[in-house]
Length: 385
Image (cartoon, rainbow, N blue to C red; front, side, top):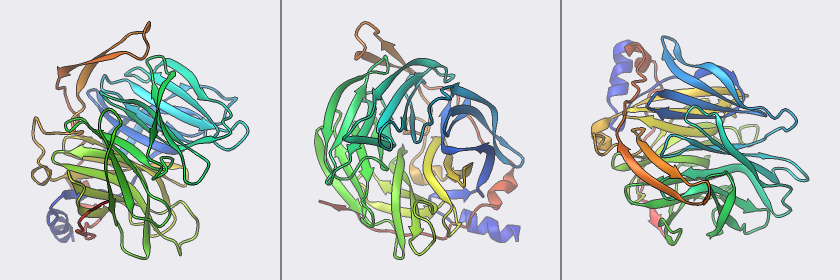
């Protein structure tokens, strides 16, 4: 049995193993792991906000030292967006209700230990815009959040967030796809910004911008075969010479609406689809709100299922991805210093300090053999329009 499972694992090109889902014993929504030089951390969303140290153990991954970040018991927060910034700090947006669902958004900046540096209200009681499932980036050339209005077609805007957690400039984005429920990530090497999303039942859509937010091109890619429907592409990474995107998929004959299975798509740098792998095999309405984070050859896939935070450990084929020192992409938590001028809050200067230690994340050898068989593979070319 173990020999057969090991052959299934090692037969794959891109992924060496996919573990079973691990419940990290912390209830809530929006599980967002991050690799840091000090080890793995995980943001734990719910009506309140917590952070924990994420540790591998003999029975899987566990959240340890769970502690609150912000205590605002008078407010129930709905949805969260969190990103680690180049200097190791964090940017966080959370939505709540004032007059309409998700018409209010709060912003925080956290230190490396996720203690609060600054905070503000991005908007309160907006009659036009909504901030559910927010898209957020914190990179060397853009720090901020995106939101969509309630109309059709939507108006999408990106709000630059300054060093005091305050809204500064605003940039209009292409009207499709709606940024709520999608994702934004950057390719620091190619200096590109990607805005991802899709309307219900439509192909996966990527808009490409340069670092000045000038639109460059778009791609549309079918990710899953019928009767499965792809949705919620909430995070992407550059891994070596490829992009990876985590998204949801479901058969709409299943009960429920937003819950399904988690999938991982692998694309080349021209957005040609290479492979799609299932990260979960519930084959039912179960998982929601996916996320990915990477440290060298370890990829963590996080989601929540029935208000429980879950993590799947993936071992990457370094040769297939072109992963090596100097070409790690988002798979090495680098250290960069950012000079934040509080007298001129919109001004930042980024200097690279160099590499840093990495976390191993390896569990016992036999955990890999209990992984999900990686039998779901597809190849399809992207279509630029």
